[in-house]
Image (tube, rainbow, N blue to C red):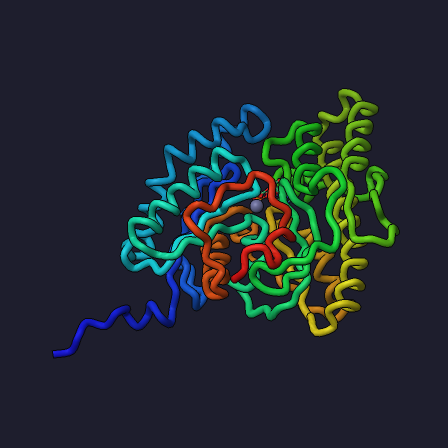
Length: 361
Ligand code: KG4
Ligand code: ZN
């Protein structure tokens, strides 16, 4: 008779992780394996609950995560056709984000880790966005990542899991915030990004001259508050005319073009820095909710082609918040032996470069 093996062979070779994302207004859980197979990716959007308020209400978000997460976790297991005992680890977003939601997701993940005696990974939300390109494509380290979302707007050199260098970031609003606020000024629904993109399709990007903040400056920082103010003044000047469909689509197209131009200008600088300091790097990656925008993608593709860099943009459903990106970041962290202890505290504010070197070993 053979003795029972201590662990099943696939456990040694292939990792199977659950990833939980609850840092904003999506309740999400996914099962991903270390060979890049997304076995399930369940996302429940709370949009309808927040829409009447024109933005995410933290208290409503936290209560909704608490109510829905157990069912989302069950669905993720069922769709992947696995049970808790099959998991080799569990990951949750530990910040930055809305503290109530982050606590709900982390507590769920810690409980699963404790009960099933599997490792736990506390994942930085932007780390998950930044590493998504390696889930969908073979992207070697180091690479230049542009992270653009509702709360973040930064260039990061990704040198490895837990090793990030920030080259520049917004000094005021994030780009997604600018899309959301511009949409609100135009009477378009929340979230503003997809609404602006849809409206811009029938508008002229040359209809209204809008500023390109920071364009031509030597660093890799962003600023979007001036662009947002210019749209507000334009809407005030046009008075009631801004409700006219043609005016709305023209302003949406002009704004989107200005925002994409700013992204392009800043990316040129970041690429020069990246090429100088990381000559072995060869890839430009975009991630985060605004990476879903086709005009922004086109600008980045054009620049990457000109600069002879490979451009990688994950499929749109993996750009906005989801559990698969958290599971994948967890896999990368656990493979690098960056396990976290169960007393890891949620961090509503958490600069990405604080991870570098901080938790290794
Ligand atoms: O990454 P994400 O889902 O959540 C955060 O971590 O913030 O990003 C949400 C942001 C919102 O500001 C939303 O308006 C924007 O991404 N967004 C878009 C598009 N889809 C989502 N912005 C421009 N164009 C889009 N198609
Ligand atoms: Zn996000």
